[in-house]
Each structure stands twice: as structure tokens, then as C-alpha cells.
Length: 135
Image 1: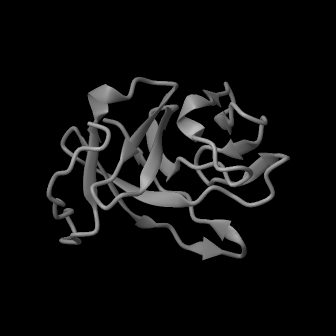
Image 2: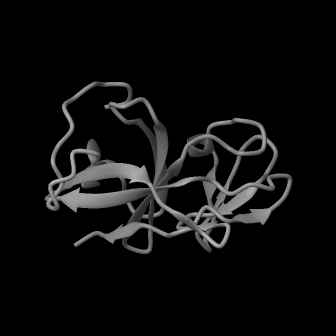
């Protein structure tokens, strides 16, 4: 599904900004995968403790793909290149060399389809977490 183009789906709230990127079955517990939204944004989908989150797939330290990194037991995303670490829900930096958080995208489910929407807001310098519980 990476790099494929498909029409944007309307979310339950009617917002055309949410785009289908994967199926829940593409993402098993404790894994991360990269998907490219039809709009062009590369996102890193994370399934941790029964919730799915979507963050930018580009490390803020030196622009390496986060989806080739690791998801640690505590929900930390670790970049494979220089070891920068981020919270998988909020994108907050947990370990240098990164100093800026990973952008977080809003996420929803439509049946088994994972929909990714616009970036979450930054409040007080932090991204608002956006996760969806897998039924």
C-alpha cells in the first residue's frame, strides 16, 4: 500500500482531510510501519498496547525514516540512525540527539481501515496525542 494513490474517504465527522493508509491487519501489536498518505506525507504508524498512533516518519534530528527504527517496550520510538528517541503517542523527545518533537497526526478507524488526518495541534510546545483503540 505504500506509495499508492486512492481517493480520500470522508471520516464519520464528514472531514475529507482523513485519508485511508492501511488496514488494522497490516499492523500487529508492538510494530511500526511506514505508509505514504495519498496527499504525500510519509507517516509512521505505531500499534502499542492496543492503540494505533500516527507520527511523521521523518526523524527531526537528521531526516531518517523512523519506521526502520525500533519500538521499545515502554512505547518509545528509537531512530535507527543516531538513536534519537520519541514518545510513540505524543512525539515528545525522550533522548537526544533530537531536540524537536515528531509531528503527530490525527488518526481514526473506519471499520478495519486506518485513516490519518491533519497534524495534531501543539499546545504549550507539545503535540496533542491522537490515538485510536483497536476493538
